Image 1 (cartoon, rainbow, N blue to C red):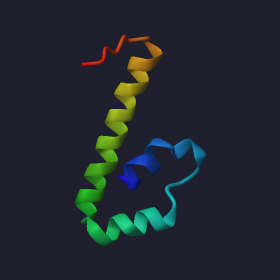
Image 2 (image 1 turned 120 degrees about the vertical axis):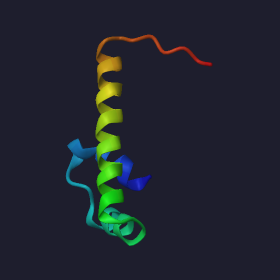
Image 3 (image 1 turned 30 degrees about the vertical axis):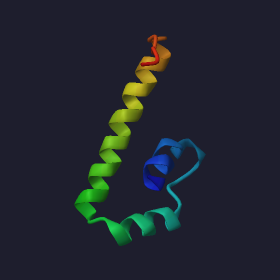
Image 4 (image 1 turned 135 degrees about the vertical axis):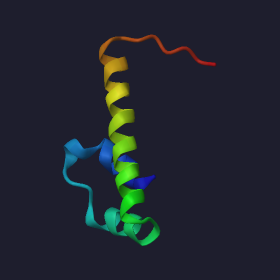
Length: 59
């Protein structure tokens, strides 16, 4: 989850080495790539929803 958070906050700077190294210790390169792409897609959809003022209703 720290890797996802760091990707979400990428405008603050690169993913910190410590976070990437922690991810690399637990995930394969393919798994890291998958997490990165999923983070990018989720963030893209969130940005579209927010900028479009899409109403989000609590369940």
